[in-house]
Image 1 (cartoon, helix red, strand yellow):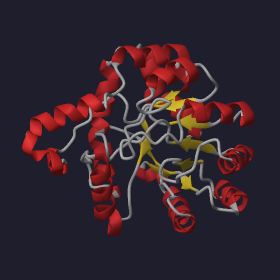
Image 2 (tube, rainbow, N blue to C red; image 1 turned 120 degrees about the vertical axis):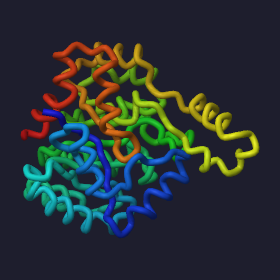
Image 3 (tube, rainbow, N blue to C red; image 1 turned 180 degrees about the horizontal axis):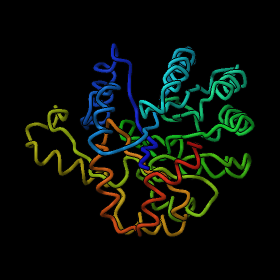
Length: 295
Protein backbone atom coordinates (compact mmCIF):
# COMPACT_ATOMS: atom_id res chain seq x y z
CA UNK A 1 0.00 0.00 0.00
CA UNK A 2 1.25 3.48 -0.94
CA UNK A 3 0.20 6.38 1.28
CA UNK A 4 1.14 10.02 0.75
CA UNK A 5 0.99 11.50 4.24
CA UNK A 6 1.35 15.15 3.24
CA UNK A 7 -0.83 16.78 0.57
CA UNK A 8 -2.85 19.96 0.19
CA UNK A 9 -5.92 20.99 -1.77
CA UNK A 10 -8.10 24.08 -1.81
CA UNK A 11 -11.81 24.65 -2.49
CA UNK A 12 -12.36 25.09 -6.23
CA UNK A 13 -13.59 28.67 -5.84
CA UNK A 14 -10.36 29.86 -4.21
CA UNK A 15 -7.74 27.42 -5.53
CA UNK A 16 -6.42 29.70 -8.28
CA UNK A 17 -6.11 32.67 -5.95
CA UNK A 18 -4.54 30.69 -3.11
CA UNK A 19 -1.99 28.98 -5.35
CA UNK A 20 -1.05 32.27 -7.03
CA UNK A 21 -0.38 33.96 -3.68
CA UNK A 22 1.69 31.07 -2.37
CA UNK A 23 3.69 30.95 -5.62
CA UNK A 24 4.39 34.66 -5.34
CA UNK A 25 5.64 34.28 -1.77
CA UNK A 26 7.80 31.22 -2.42
CA UNK A 27 9.07 31.91 -5.97
CA UNK A 28 8.23 28.36 -7.02
CA UNK A 29 5.42 26.98 -9.15
CA UNK A 30 2.97 24.31 -8.08
CA UNK A 31 2.78 21.17 -10.19
CA UNK A 32 -1.00 20.87 -9.78
CA UNK A 33 -3.91 23.30 -9.61
CA UNK A 34 -4.60 22.57 -5.95
CA UNK A 35 -8.06 21.13 -6.68
CA UNK A 36 -9.20 17.69 -5.51
CA UNK A 37 -9.72 16.44 -9.06
CA UNK A 38 -6.08 17.09 -9.94
CA UNK A 39 -4.85 15.27 -6.84
CA UNK A 40 -7.06 12.29 -7.65
CA UNK A 41 -5.58 12.09 -11.14
CA UNK A 42 -2.07 12.40 -9.71
CA UNK A 43 -2.75 9.51 -7.34
CA UNK A 44 -3.91 7.32 -10.23
CA UNK A 45 -0.80 8.18 -12.23
CA UNK A 46 1.55 7.44 -9.34
CA UNK A 47 -0.34 4.39 -8.06
CA UNK A 48 -0.97 5.93 -4.64
CA UNK A 49 -3.74 4.32 -2.59
CA UNK A 50 -4.39 7.09 -0.07
CA UNK A 51 -3.47 10.75 0.26
CA UNK A 52 -3.73 12.58 3.57
CA UNK A 53 -5.03 16.14 3.15
CA UNK A 54 -3.59 18.67 5.60
CA UNK A 55 -5.66 21.88 5.73
CA UNK A 56 -4.17 24.97 7.36
CA UNK A 57 -6.35 27.31 9.43
CA UNK A 58 -4.85 30.80 9.04
CA UNK A 59 -7.46 32.56 11.17
CA UNK A 60 -9.67 31.18 13.97
CA UNK A 61 -12.94 31.66 12.10
CA UNK A 62 -11.88 29.24 9.34
CA UNK A 63 -11.80 26.11 11.44
CA UNK A 64 -15.54 25.41 11.42
CA UNK A 65 -15.89 25.18 7.63
CA UNK A 66 -12.55 23.41 7.18
CA UNK A 67 -13.42 20.77 9.76
CA UNK A 68 -16.94 20.29 8.44
CA UNK A 69 -15.49 19.65 5.00
CA UNK A 70 -12.94 17.21 6.45
CA UNK A 71 -15.64 15.22 8.23
CA UNK A 72 -17.77 15.05 5.08
CA UNK A 73 -14.83 14.08 2.86
CA UNK A 74 -13.77 11.29 5.20
CA UNK A 75 -17.13 9.57 4.93
CA UNK A 76 -16.03 8.30 1.52
CA UNK A 77 -12.26 8.01 1.94
CA UNK A 78 -12.13 4.27 1.23
CA UNK A 79 -13.68 4.87 -2.18
CA UNK A 80 -11.84 8.11 -3.02
CA UNK A 81 -8.50 7.48 -1.30
CA UNK A 82 -8.70 11.01 0.15
CA UNK A 83 -8.37 11.18 3.93
CA UNK A 84 -8.54 14.65 5.47
CA UNK A 85 -7.17 15.84 8.79
CA UNK A 86 -8.79 18.70 10.61
CA UNK A 87 -7.39 22.13 11.32
CA UNK A 88 -7.17 24.41 14.30
CA UNK A 89 -5.72 27.83 15.12
CA UNK A 90 -3.83 28.61 18.32
CA UNK A 91 -6.33 31.43 18.98
CA UNK A 92 -9.30 29.05 19.02
CA UNK A 93 -10.18 29.35 22.72
CA UNK A 94 -12.58 26.40 22.46
CA UNK A 95 -9.79 24.13 21.21
CA UNK A 96 -10.85 21.31 23.52
CA UNK A 97 -14.38 21.24 22.09
CA UNK A 98 -13.05 21.41 18.52
CA UNK A 99 -10.62 18.54 19.04
CA UNK A 100 -13.14 16.37 20.84
CA UNK A 101 -15.64 16.91 18.03
CA UNK A 102 -13.07 15.92 15.41
CA UNK A 103 -12.18 12.74 17.30
CA UNK A 104 -15.83 11.82 17.82
CA UNK A 105 -16.43 12.22 14.07
CA UNK A 106 -13.60 9.89 13.14
CA UNK A 107 -11.04 12.48 12.02
CA UNK A 108 -7.63 10.98 12.64
CA UNK A 109 -5.55 14.09 13.20
CA UNK A 110 -4.96 17.81 12.86
CA UNK A 111 -2.50 20.03 11.02
CA UNK A 112 -0.88 23.11 12.53
CA UNK A 113 1.48 25.54 10.84
CA UNK A 114 3.36 27.83 13.23
CA UNK A 115 4.78 30.01 10.44
CA UNK A 116 1.43 30.68 8.75
CA UNK A 117 -0.24 31.01 12.16
CA UNK A 118 2.50 33.38 13.41
CA UNK A 119 2.95 31.49 16.68
CA UNK A 120 6.01 29.82 18.14
CA UNK A 121 5.67 26.06 18.39
CA UNK A 122 6.48 26.08 22.11
CA UNK A 123 3.84 28.72 22.84
CA UNK A 124 1.43 27.71 25.60
CA UNK A 125 -1.46 27.77 23.12
CA UNK A 126 0.14 25.01 21.05
CA UNK A 127 1.12 23.10 24.16
CA UNK A 128 -2.52 23.01 25.21
CA UNK A 129 -3.66 21.93 21.75
CA UNK A 130 -1.08 19.17 21.45
CA UNK A 131 -1.79 17.86 24.93
CA UNK A 132 -5.53 17.84 24.25
CA UNK A 133 -4.98 16.14 20.89
CA UNK A 134 -3.04 13.41 22.69
CA UNK A 135 -5.92 12.95 25.13
CA UNK A 136 -8.26 12.49 22.15
CA UNK A 137 -5.90 10.08 20.37
CA UNK A 138 -5.38 12.50 17.47
CA UNK A 139 -2.28 12.67 15.31
CA UNK A 140 -0.71 16.14 15.17
CA UNK A 141 1.16 17.10 12.01
CA UNK A 142 3.13 20.32 12.18
CA UNK A 143 5.12 22.19 9.61
CA UNK A 144 8.70 21.96 10.83
CA UNK A 145 11.75 24.06 10.07
CA UNK A 146 11.78 27.21 8.00
CA UNK A 147 9.26 28.02 5.27
CA UNK A 148 10.35 28.90 1.76
CA UNK A 149 7.78 31.68 1.61
CA UNK A 150 8.98 33.33 4.85
CA UNK A 151 12.79 33.36 4.67
CA UNK A 152 14.60 33.26 8.01
CA UNK A 153 11.48 33.26 10.18
CA UNK A 154 12.12 30.82 13.00
CA UNK A 155 8.87 29.57 14.53
CA UNK A 156 9.35 25.80 14.57
CA UNK A 157 13.00 24.74 14.40
CA UNK A 158 14.49 22.26 16.90
CA UNK A 159 14.98 24.98 19.52
CA UNK A 160 11.18 25.31 19.68
CA UNK A 161 10.42 21.63 19.11
CA UNK A 162 12.57 20.13 21.87
CA UNK A 163 10.78 21.88 24.78
CA UNK A 164 7.45 20.54 23.51
CA UNK A 165 8.76 16.99 23.36
CA UNK A 166 10.11 17.34 26.88
CA UNK A 167 6.94 18.85 28.37
CA UNK A 168 4.16 17.02 26.53
CA UNK A 169 5.81 13.79 25.32
CA UNK A 170 3.30 13.40 22.45
CA UNK A 171 3.13 9.91 20.99
CA UNK A 172 1.59 10.91 17.64
CA UNK A 173 3.46 14.08 16.68
CA UNK A 174 4.60 14.24 13.04
CA UNK A 175 7.30 16.76 12.09
CA UNK A 176 6.91 17.56 8.41
CA UNK A 177 9.74 18.07 5.91
CA UNK A 178 11.98 15.42 7.47
CA UNK A 179 11.93 17.13 10.82
CA UNK A 180 12.67 20.67 9.73
CA UNK A 181 12.96 22.22 6.29
CA UNK A 182 16.35 23.81 5.64
CA UNK A 183 17.68 23.00 9.11
CA UNK A 184 18.46 19.34 8.57
CA UNK A 185 21.86 19.47 10.26
CA UNK A 186 20.09 20.35 13.51
CA UNK A 187 17.50 17.64 12.83
CA UNK A 188 20.21 15.03 12.35
CA UNK A 189 21.94 15.88 15.62
CA UNK A 190 19.03 16.98 17.85
CA UNK A 191 15.80 15.37 16.60
CA UNK A 192 16.72 12.09 14.91
CA UNK A 193 16.18 9.20 17.31
CA UNK A 194 13.61 10.99 19.49
CA UNK A 195 10.05 9.57 19.83
CA UNK A 196 8.45 11.59 17.04
CA UNK A 197 7.43 10.83 13.47
CA UNK A 198 9.03 12.51 10.46
CA UNK A 199 7.36 12.94 7.09
CA UNK A 200 9.57 13.37 4.06
CA UNK A 201 7.58 16.04 2.20
CA UNK A 202 9.37 18.76 0.23
CA UNK A 203 12.78 17.45 1.25
CA UNK A 204 14.58 15.30 -1.32
CA UNK A 205 12.96 16.38 -4.59
CA UNK A 206 14.55 19.34 -6.36
CA UNK A 207 13.03 22.80 -6.23
CA UNK A 208 11.99 24.21 -9.56
CA UNK A 209 11.82 27.98 -9.37
CA UNK A 210 9.87 29.73 -12.09
CA UNK A 211 12.06 32.51 -13.49
CA UNK A 212 8.94 34.54 -14.29
CA UNK A 213 8.44 34.97 -10.57
CA UNK A 214 11.76 36.79 -10.23
CA UNK A 215 10.50 40.02 -11.74
CA UNK A 216 13.18 42.18 -10.13
CA UNK A 217 15.94 39.89 -11.33
CA UNK A 218 14.98 39.35 -14.95
CA UNK A 219 17.81 41.47 -16.29
CA UNK A 220 20.26 38.88 -14.94
CA UNK A 221 18.73 36.15 -17.06
CA UNK A 222 16.38 33.35 -16.13
CA UNK A 223 19.03 30.64 -15.84
CA UNK A 224 21.11 32.74 -13.46
CA UNK A 225 18.05 33.44 -11.30
CA UNK A 226 17.09 29.78 -11.11
CA UNK A 227 20.61 28.58 -10.27
CA UNK A 228 21.03 31.19 -7.55
CA UNK A 229 17.66 30.27 -6.08
CA UNK A 230 18.60 26.59 -5.90
CA UNK A 231 21.94 27.51 -4.33
CA UNK A 232 20.17 29.57 -1.67
CA UNK A 233 17.61 26.82 -0.99
CA UNK A 234 19.43 23.45 -1.07
CA UNK A 235 17.27 20.41 -0.52
CA UNK A 236 18.17 17.55 1.80
CA UNK A 237 21.09 15.64 0.30
CA UNK A 238 21.10 11.88 -0.08
CA UNK A 239 23.80 11.13 2.47
CA UNK A 240 22.24 13.17 5.26
CA UNK A 241 18.79 11.76 4.51
CA UNK A 242 20.06 8.20 4.82
CA UNK A 243 21.88 9.05 8.06
CA UNK A 244 18.68 10.53 9.50
CA UNK A 245 16.74 7.40 8.50
CA UNK A 246 19.35 5.15 10.10
CA UNK A 247 19.49 7.15 13.33
CA UNK A 248 15.77 7.76 13.62
CA UNK A 249 14.59 4.37 12.42
CA UNK A 250 12.68 3.73 9.22
CA UNK A 251 9.67 2.64 11.28
CA UNK A 252 9.01 6.27 12.33
CA UNK A 253 9.25 7.90 8.90
CA UNK A 254 6.33 8.63 6.57
CA UNK A 255 6.37 9.31 2.85
CA UNK A 256 5.00 12.71 1.88
CA UNK A 257 5.07 14.67 -1.35
CA UNK A 258 3.68 18.08 -0.30
CA UNK A 259 1.53 18.03 -3.44
CA UNK A 260 0.74 20.36 -5.20
CA UNK A 261 4.26 21.72 -4.55
CA UNK A 262 5.98 18.49 -5.53
CA UNK A 263 4.94 15.75 -7.94
CA UNK A 264 3.72 12.59 -6.24
CA UNK A 265 5.22 10.42 -8.97
CA UNK A 266 8.56 12.23 -8.86
CA UNK A 267 8.60 12.03 -5.07
CA UNK A 268 7.95 8.29 -5.15
CA UNK A 269 10.70 7.78 -7.71
CA UNK A 270 13.15 9.81 -5.61
CA UNK A 271 12.49 7.64 -2.57
CA UNK A 272 12.91 4.44 -4.57
CA UNK A 273 16.26 5.58 -5.97
CA UNK A 274 17.83 7.07 -2.86
CA UNK A 275 19.31 3.85 -1.51
CA UNK A 276 16.89 2.52 1.10
CA UNK A 277 16.52 -1.21 1.73
CA UNK A 278 13.31 -2.74 0.42
CA UNK A 279 12.11 -3.30 3.98
CA UNK A 280 12.69 0.36 4.89
CA UNK A 281 11.14 1.53 1.64
CA UNK A 282 7.99 -0.53 2.16
CA UNK A 283 7.61 0.87 5.67
CA UNK A 284 8.17 4.49 4.66
CA UNK A 285 6.01 4.44 1.54
CA UNK A 286 2.95 3.08 3.27
CA UNK A 287 3.39 0.49 5.98
CA UNK A 288 4.07 3.00 8.76
CA UNK A 289 1.22 5.29 7.74
CA UNK A 290 -1.19 2.37 7.49
CA UNK A 291 -0.49 1.50 11.12
CA UNK A 292 -0.53 5.09 12.37
CA UNK A 293 -3.81 5.85 10.57
CA UNK A 294 -5.29 2.45 11.39
CA UNK A 295 -6.55 1.77 7.88
